[in-house]
Amino acid sequence: MQTDIILLTSIISTLFVVFGIAVYREFVVMDTETYTFQKEFGPRAGLVNFVANLTANKTLTKEELEVIYQAIQRNIADMESDGVYFDPSLKDIVQSQISVLKPKS
Image 1 (tube, helix red, strand yellow):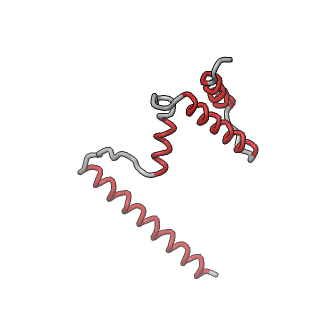
Image 2 (cartoon, helix red, strand yellow):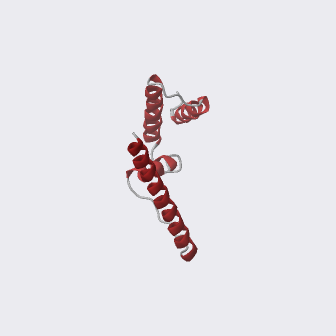
Image 3 (cartoon, helix red, strand yellow):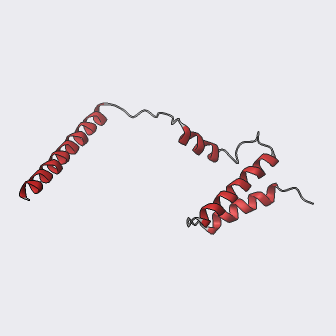
């Protein structure tokens, strides 16, 4: 019983020391080198950039924007049926964008 406690304590102590050394080494590197921005890439960054540029992109037609906003609205509804709820202001923004894009009859 006591060997388990001693083993667990020694493992946690070792990990704590390793973490402390890693933090110290990172601070030493930060002192000697300057930070350079690196553009993110990959699927997550692509999705974030797409959503960020959604309304700013002038090459999309109104029909394409309407389809995208309706898909967002459907996804919000699906997620809410699964128990994930969103702020009503977000739903209002999506609904207002859809109403702006719909052709006036």
